[in-house]
Length: 114
Length: 112
Image 1 (cartoon, rainbow over the protein chains, first blue to last red):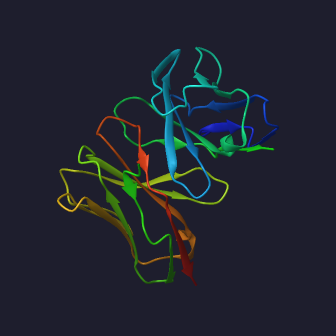
Image 2: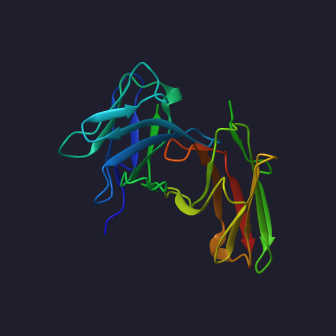
């Protein structure tokens, strides 16, 4: 009965490199959300996806950031040309999409940009 | 802009006593409120929620109170236990919408 799985747990990138963060939702969940937590801040909504569809990306920066949730495989949050300000904890959450409000979160990926 | 605010970033309480965490919100469209608990190196876990049609919801040692007119909610934990030591996040949304707005969190330390 695995929960939301995120990998890697820690990711170190140099400025200008690409970061790929992966999220496998809980079994039976078809809705995925990505949140970002900057140091000393609360979690901020980035993007909401269903299988093969981006439903709401209003919280995601317009440039360098993209997300996908393909028919097969995990959801991917991709950050191109990373900058120091991208250093944060990135959390993925899933829900069954049946109106259940409760989100189940993964343990997060800590991204450090050198 | 911070739509959900949690002041008093940290709280220390003796085991067995009550912990009270406060949360204020500014967006009057919010009608569903949640508390999440987070341990270091883990993701937030759901604790308790309340919809705007209620003013109180209780689950075991945890009770959430909602004052809509003041745009204020609070979480009461009684009795507090050492395992309750964690960061507590208040979150809010429009019902049916999982784009949660989170506060910055309160660190709770329960002293044995």
